[in-house]
Image (tube, rainbow, N blue to C red; front, side, top):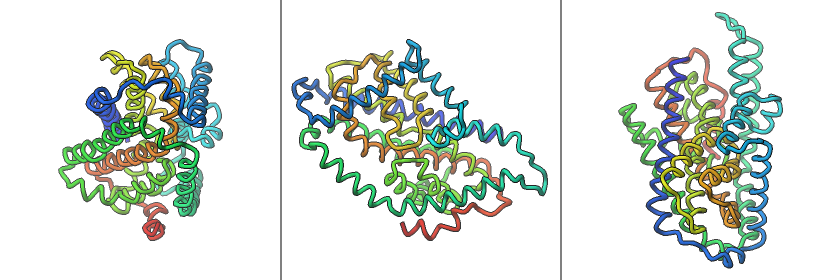
Length: 375
């Protein structure tokens, strides 16, 4: 386990840093020359709902900073991450999707579980049964996802004046989607080819159901059953590898989130007539990488951390942050696809270098393959 763990951590750290640097390069090419300072009067003319939503997010970040009690924004994030690693209440951590704390608690429990040859611990048996039940429930819930997404889109279109927002979000979306596309379809396949000498197109085709589920749910945690099924049943990743690499990736591998944070702050800066020097950009890269590790695997969880990255770079959020909030529903779905792809590619690479054999039957997702194929 130690060797697999080290390689997994190195892979996730490397892809996160690569994602951050790629986002910076895309921003320098697209946002810096194209985005001009907006007239404050035009910004004030945005719909009240957009500015109100942005103000509420700024207020939430202010509360987060105040609760930290430290002057250093980087230390605040490090402290918050450490707090998540050691949860004060494991039930509350599970209920609020603080997966970093859940993972650390699970590791400690696993170290003390009595494992003997030919004997299955009651705790392990209980967890297996819970896993089967939860996977069946998630499949039932996601069957209603198309209706939920349709309702959400209708609500957003009716609430926001898209004709006014279009002038503000164009380059933001172009830079964001370009960086995500390059990470997903250039960086990941290249890493896969270099590490395995196999055709990445076949592997990526087999994880397409997980990618569509990620776009529909905007949550890598909710997509996990599909991610696990695609790895084990479609790409023949050993269950032992998949059940270690993928849950860890859901927790700490947030390449798409890291890129979104950097693109958002670049856009906020140049839309307000500010510039970012080399030192600020490097601070953004480091802080975004750390922040993405601690981000919950739930929809729009990264919005609060945008304030942290902006403050590190001395960029005020202002009313323009409301524009980011208004379009985050779309950006969130794309970055979730990238997060899931990064986890899946990592599982494939680890499976190539550590060809373990499964002694037990595949998890419950195999029994539900026909159901998921039809969704």
